[in-house]
Image (cartoon, one colour):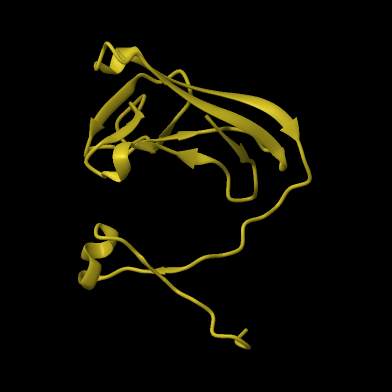
Length: 124
């Protein structure tokens, strides 16, 4: 489980097992072309085809959610997995600082990691 806070960026996510992008666990889209799904969506993966993300629909900035993932260790099928989130608190919103990463052919467009852009001291 983990806790996340609703900010102006929103909350969209998927799971990546063992930091391996070929082991993504994600929701099945309700219809072709959907990018996001809710907590009731069937679960797919782990595989490398996870184009869909879970999305927490809430317009209350500062709402805090506990996200939990459950998997039956005796059953490796998707039906044995469950994603649940529960609102647990309201806190003053803490907006994330903007962060930029450089991707290009030199790192397979992010597949081999991303290079974080740093601000030199004294730069705006």
